[in-house]
Image 1: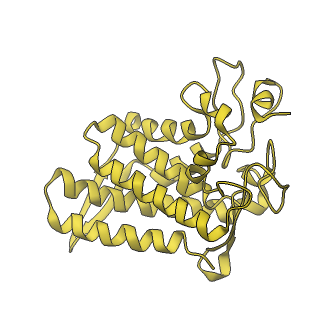
Image 2 (image 1 turned 180 degrees about the horizontal axis):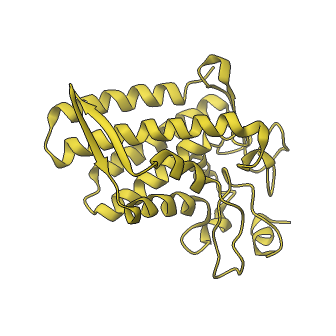
Length: 247
């Protein structure tokens, strides 16, 4: 059964796309999946007040409920698309790096991590270049999706005892769970999956850390603050080097 055929079965939950998510509530009938990325993202956003420091100054970026919703909705759309069209490309090699997965079954973990890092930095630069506030928030949501997927045990095998370095990046296509991502679903992607709880907490922490970095970077852009820009550039590189580090 193809993934898209599975998606069209209204009685079947979607659980295979990165911590899952609820979507497609109109065109395909009842909502597919269960809340996942939404839970992690809202936990990372908290009240919507994101603290950061520039030098010795303590500053904040405050997001309204509507602005937070834009981030959350764009995060979920990475899996489903705004009208569920993303489901038809679930196996496309070029899409895998957006979900912290190997592009093909034969790709090495080292090469996959390089692809994922390229995607991460490309998305980060896109956020800083974006001049439309609403689209900027959507871009943040999409980058958080990649970051969160990279901690899902269905997507990667990390070593919690070695600062969560990446031992293996899984493939969504050939192969079977537990070595690869299960198809069409993988219980390790569920926020209700007990053994994944520690990884979910780490995904939340990483999301919070990135939000603080991007808040500082955007302050540098919008306020014309070169100190914030320089600090944020150094911080995002250290952050990415740690998050996407090969064991």
